[in-house]
Structures are given as structure tokens and as C-alpha cells.
Length: 413
Image (cartoon, rainbow, N blue to C red; front, side, top):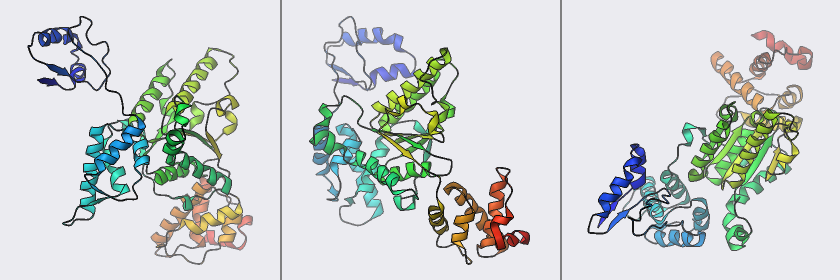
């Protein structure tokens, strides 16, 4: 028997699809069975009935895919703590991909713990191997972030932090709610999460998205919304469609930064531009609802987004400007343990330097370089000078009266 793999894709790749009828004529004259395999839907492939049978192999149902994972894992030594339900829900693999992922996970485990015995596959090995099976080009359309933070690093009011945790549980327990509890029969699509983060710059929106990725062991890609907006009709939707198509196979978190570029108070249609802008927004929300992963919009101006659009999002989390107590916590955590510190007046810094978390990070890093260049420990004079540099960005002078006795430290530079 002859098996032709990637039949349709090979013709399309070399722009020879017009050769399909002649090729089918040649195949029809053969006196033995021929299989034509394609990863893309091909119906209708042959209108002249030269092909005896055409059928599509469907994706595995969720329960069968879970059983496929468990069955394939029997050939390996896996950590009993591995959550097969979670991995099955997260990665809708074919049986072949499942086998390959487990083999790669075993090799990764062997590399981590070389020895004569059979390596034990643990959760990190499995996650890494699964992402290696995915074939997408998201990095050509977005920037991949590498999460380094945990929930303890996020300085945010407790209600907002709890809402983030609940959003993570939405993904962790998808199999329980949709499969075991039957909600998949109630919903035709929309098993993922659509979120909106709002707040001033530097209040932790990007960090929160990274923390979710870290907590869920998911890849995260940052999309600059301003770069996908086009003045040409239909081009914005095309760009969005490409991003979500690539993300669907990668099960990544999509983080749309500067969402104000596409959102606005556009419910009232006054001209053709407003009508088209509404179409763009509706298309984005539709794709977010259909996406089975996590999609997050970030905006500095929640008031610019119409309530009609907000109702279609699962979670809206507001990131307020940090108050004095939160600023003190930020100052106390911003310097790594290895950083040599002189005596710092954290209460004073929190009270007088009214900065966001991002600005505090900028000041701390600049102060560290000032101290390193002088061969000194990081002290108040370095922080205040760095604070002056930070205000210079916004053409704001330092109010020396606010600094009190510490104002004299600025004269040391």
C-alpha cells in the first residue's frame, strides 16, 4: 500500500494545487490501495469520485484523551502527583503527540537526574515537553515574556489579589467544572478566561499577568495592541485572527497591552468610522470569548471603555495607585538580599515619595548604580538623587521642602 503524507499541504507549499486533478488521475490508475493523508480539512477533495472514500478523523473527546494520557503513561515512571486531568484539558493532543510528549519528558527527567534507574517524570518535565510539541509562530507576532514573580511579590489590595487567584482556579479546575460537573453540555464555546486589567502605569498589570503564567505553568505573549491596529478596513481583524489562530495551538496567555488603542466609548455610532471601530472591538471580544486559554487586556483608562463591552469580560481587576502602607512594603521588598544597604528611612520614602510600583523599581535600580559607581552601600542620598532623575522624566522639579532634612543630601552630587 502507498501512503502519501501531507498530501494537500505539500501541493500548497509549492503553489502547485492546480496539479491536483492530474495527480488524482494518476493515482486512480494504480491497482492497489493508496492512502492520502492531510492535516488540513480537504473536503471536497475530488468532485469526480476518483477517491473511493473520504473521511475526517475527529479530535479525541476529553474523556478519551484523558484515558490516552493515562494509558501512554503506563510505559513510563511518572510522579504520582502529576495531574493527568489538568494536562489533558490544557493540551488537546493527538495520541501520537501524547506519546512523543511523554518520551521527551522522560529524556528531560533523565538529564535532570542521571542514573541507572528509570527516570521519574515530574510536572515541570511534562509541561516543558508538551510545549515542545506545539507548532506555532506567536513569537513573530508578539513578544514572549519570561515570568519571574509569584503572588507574594505583588503588592495589591487583598480583594484584587483574591480575584486573580480565582481566575487562576478557573483554569486549574476546568476539567472538574466542565467535564465532571457537566457544564460543557451547557456551553458551546468559551471555556477560557477573558480579563481586563485597569490602572495607572507602573501599578503591576504586566507583573500580575506574568504571575498568572507562572502560577499556571503557561507561556505568556505580550501583544502591542497599537501595532495590530490598521487604518485599512479588515486589516485589524485579519491581524487579530492570525494571533488567536496561532495561540489556539499554543495554549498561551495573550496579554494585550495598551488596549486603549482599540477600545473607546463607541456605542453611539455617529459616522462610518465609529461603526467600523465598533466592529473591530466586537471581533476582538468574540475571539477572546472563543479562545480556550487566557486573554488579558490592559488599559490605563477604564473610563474610556464602554460598559456594553465590559459586560462581555469574565474578570475586571482594578490596579489602584499604591497608598502609603503599600509603598512602604514596596520599598522594603525592592532591593535583593545581596544588595549592600545603608540605613534607609522606609517610612519617609513611603510618605514623601509618591511613586507607583514601577517608578519605585526605576528609582531603586538607578540608586543601586549610583552607589555601585561610588563604591558605597545604597543609601538615602543615592535614592533621592535617583528620585530626582525619575521626576526629570516628567519635567517635574523636586520639592526640597517635602524632603526636609534629607534635602541636603541632593547637594552631595
